[in-house]
Structure formats: C-alpha cells, structure tokens
Amino acid sequence: MNIYKNTFSEIGLDPDNHKLLFGLSTEFELENGNEIRENKLYKVDKILSLYLRIWICKHVIGISLNFDKLRNIKIQEISVSFWHQKKNRNSFKFVFGRAGYRKDAEQIYKKIKKERKSK
Image (cartoon, rainbow, N blue to C red):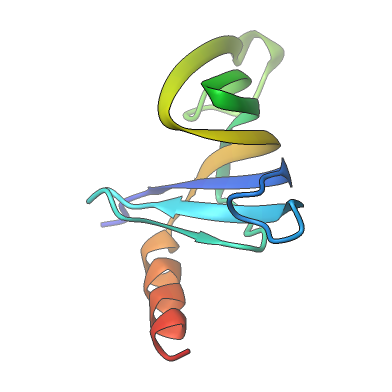
C-alpha cells in the first residue's frame, strides 16, 4: 500500500535555511509528524498547490492556488486561498513554493538522515 507524504519545494529569500540568504530547498513531512529539509529541489509525483509565503517578524501571510488532487487540472478546479499565521519567533522570509506529494518521501527522509549521521 502506498501512503503519500507531503513535499514542499521552495525558492526564495530564507535566511533560516540558506547561508547566503537566497536559495532553494525541499521539505519532506511524514505522517508521523517527522520532517526534514534538504537544500535542493526534488520533483513531486503530483502538485497540489502553488504558493507565495511572506514571513515578517512573527506574522506569516500567504496566498495559494490549490488544485483538485483527484483529477487533471482544469481552470474550474483551481481555488485561491489566503492565510495568516502567528509564530512564536521572529524571522523574515519571502518564498515561492509548490506543495505536493511523493510516494518515496519516506525513503528519501531515511537516506538524508543516514547521510547527516555519517558526517
């Protein structure tokens, strides 16, 4: 049985995850709550949304285009959402991203963890 995992690929200004402030990364989020970020882009099996996320101080605002994950993308199956979230820490980020899933996200997660332990 294939269990899909969330995958978020982002590019933009993100000083928390990039030494040079600007870069690209992919975060894998597993069903058990574990997550890991890798500073490179991975393809996704299916794109579920495209988003712009802006984090200023403790406030995160975003806009996303959400696609129907069960059908081929058609214009009437796209919805737009806006959101705001308050965080406990200060940061500044401006990133464009895509959210989706990969069937092999758990294997990639384990591979990255293993590589980091061996360093």
